[in-house]
Length: 234
Image (tube, rainbow, N blue to C red; front, side, top):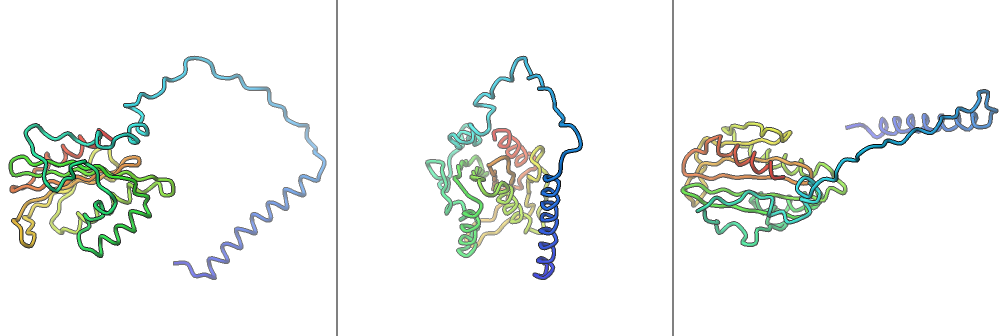
């Protein structure tokens, strides 16, 4: 961290440069011009066909401002919806923050999400055989912080990486988006053990989170297919 003295010295130097430039400009403005005024002829305007406006399907802004639930993956035929998935498919800030677990973490997450301009979140999920899938899609306003979805994705990626045995791979076409497979059984107090996989990525004003829980180890093709198909929709 810079010391206050060093910071003020750098600030004074910067202001000195600005002040010197301003003084030089005033001196030059008071002198008679020695060169003739340059006159540039008007430039011709471009003619020809204009590009067609984006359709609603291709205009991400229009699409994202609509019903976010329509951007979520569709539930497979024959699968059932877990009780933990809200019936209306929406999740508020406090529900979204609750994924952090303990009360102190939830409170910290609330503050973080408010600072990141959390707007809304849509959620879906299904159970098929011994596997359960949850897909969350969060939207941020981005009026103050254009990195909000990236920050949200980075926070959940950090949580996934706290498992010393976790394996990860990049999700193609998503920048820093990654998928994770936890190869060892997770034993939750008071519950049956299970295997896990997850994926976290962001695009534009949206952040995507996917979790897969299974009685058997989750194959890479399962989590990667879900992540790639979901990112194609946003």
